[in-house]
Image 1 (cartoon, rainbow, N blue to C red):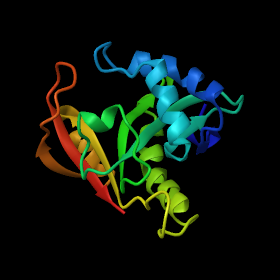
Image 2: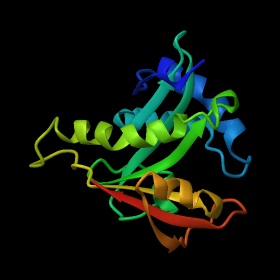
Image 3: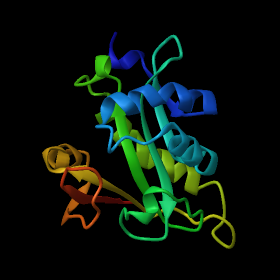
Length: 175
């Protein structure tokens, strides 16, 4: 199956989040993977920040999930909370099912994600309520920094966040 056969859209239900959980569990070491409960919390609070790739049968094969924070970078605190008044979308996962890896799916999601967030931003005024998102931020493993830089994210150096056993780097994309 080719990349062109996939449909890219926001996740629409908790059932789709539940279907994405095995991808998360397969994509990260146990000490780094989000729990199903954490994924559902994030979706319930920030469904506008869940972008998925779906095969022709409607099965999810990849996704990006984020929440909003009032910090400029991903912090340990932002990994477990959502602040609708925060102007930074903290990307917690860019995850592709094993059978779709190295086929351009993650690159396509990363290319579409800024426009998805811009579309969300265009839907409201900034006078009250949720904040417009002005920055995408993520933690990246050192080995993936060049991949994210190719997707136009800027690496700002090693992060102060400790998550699992890997060393992480702060990457941002200003909208």
